[in-house]
Image 1 (cartoon, rainbow, N blue to C red):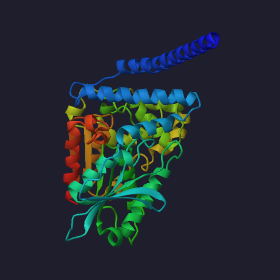
Image 2: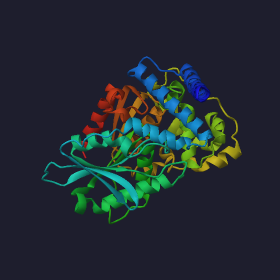
Image 3: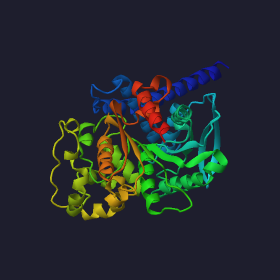
Length: 423
C-alpha cells in the first residue's frame, strides 16, 4: 500500500513539474516578444495617457502571440482567438440605458443591430448606418455597442450598426457589398418601419469602417436609384483612404505609435484586397506604384497640401525611378477608388455628401483624413473637420470602457454627436 501511495505521489509530482515547466515555457514565449515589442514602441509625450496606451498595446500583442501559439498547436485559429479576446475586452454586457430600445435584426441577410431612441418626437427622426473599424479583419457589432448607444441617445438618432463580412474569410468587395445592401435596405424601409426620414439618413464609421463609408458614398453617387435618396452625409472617423503612399508625414511621424503601426496598415489593406502579404515591404518602399501614376496622384497626396505643423520632422520620400511590375499587378486593384477613395477623380468627389472628418494627431492615417478634407473642399463639398491633438488611432473605440476610457474619447464622441444633430 505504501508503495502505491509513493508511486501516486511521485506521479503527481512529475505531472506538476511538467505542468510548471510547460507554463513557464508558455509565459516565456509570450513575455519575451511583448518585451521586445515594447522596446520598439514610440509613444510621444503628447499622447493622451501614454502609460495606459502602453498597457493596452502590450495586452493586444500578448493576445496575438497566444493566438499564434494556439494556432500552431492546432487548438484554434489565431484570427478567431484574437476576435474572441477583443470581444471579451470591449463587449462586456451592460444593461440597456433608459430611453433606448435595441434590436438585433437582419437586413438583406446581413446582421445588424438597431438602436432606437424611445422619446416621442413630433417629426421623423434622422438615421445613421454605422460601419465598425478593425482593419477589415476584426471588430463586430458588440465591440461598438457603447459608441452606437451614445450617438443614438445623445443625438436622438436611429443608428444601424452593421456586422459586415470580414477578411481573411472574405475579400473585397464582400465588405463593401454588405454595407451597400444594408444601406439600401434601410433607406427603403426607414420611413415605414422606423419613422426615419430617408433624406436625413447618413453613413459613417471609423478606420476601415470609414473607408467603407467613403467608398459606399462614391459607389452610390455613380449608381443613383431614382426611388431612393442618397446618404445626406458621411461621418468619417480617422479614415483609411489610400494605399498609394505610405510615406506621408503622418506615416513617418507615427510609424510605431499604437494601436496602428505603419507596417500593419499595409498588412490590413492587403488582407482586405487579396490576402497576398508577401509584397508588404515593397509597398512600404514605394515600389508598387508606376511613375506615371505617382505623377497623377502627386497633386492629391503632396505633403505641401498639409499645414506646416503636420510636416514637422518628415523627410522627403526617396525618389523611386521605376516600379516593380509584379508587385503592381498584385495590388493594382487597391488603387481603385473603391479601396482608395482619396484617389477618386474630381467629378466623383463633387457628388459627395456633406462630410464630417475626425483625425488624430498621433495616427498614421491622420494625413489621409486631412488631404481628403482638402480634396472635398476643393470640389465644393461642405466639410466639418475635428482634430484630436492628443489622440491616437482607435481612441473612439475605448469610449465608456471603464479603465480603458481616455478623456479624448469623449471629446471625439461629443464632436460626432454635435455634427449628427445638425443633419
